[in-house]
View 1 (tube, rainbow, N blue to C red):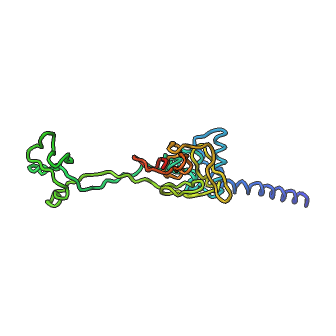
View 2: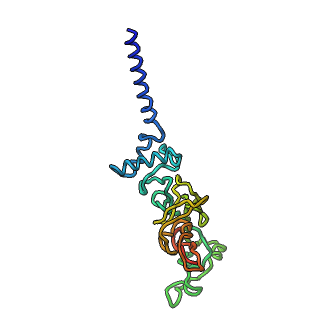
Length: 255
């Protein structure tokens, strides 16, 4: 009888030991269940889905991201709608950067003013030409908007400005060109290098190594100009950032 009680107690103990880890794993903030939505967002299947799961769990356990709604969210693929720890506006703009915000302001300018109808028209082409050439239409003056406002008419000439979001990624070696970004040599932060180059430790620092990239190559362009330092130029010149003429970010040119 005593032997039977011992066997029953041992079975219950073994069952408890077997259940406890599975319960802990099921509700782990970085477990399979917690990170299932992030993995599903990638759209991967088969071996790719397994690799995605391992990456997401590893990043989550390292404290680089969250599978429970924290920031940044865990992600293993650009285009999944999640801006992960190794992504930013440069590497994955569709997930990390919404369309640049546009604001409308008013600046003093000259406009066509109908003296009879008291209606504001379009911008003046010249002080003496408010309408189709060769002569302005009758009863039309070209006045500065400040003068019209002084008289009491509210005419405005809109202009559009674009606001660019700052970079958030880690850059290999240094982040000293352009707004935003951090410098890191820690592999956990997936420090960025231009396409075709890798971040390698060089004593107490690190830098991007690989095939040389000519300054001006599109692979050096981005939201910041931190990649320009890796571009090659003729002797006596250095590769530096040049703000893009349209849109956000920088191109690179020898200076």
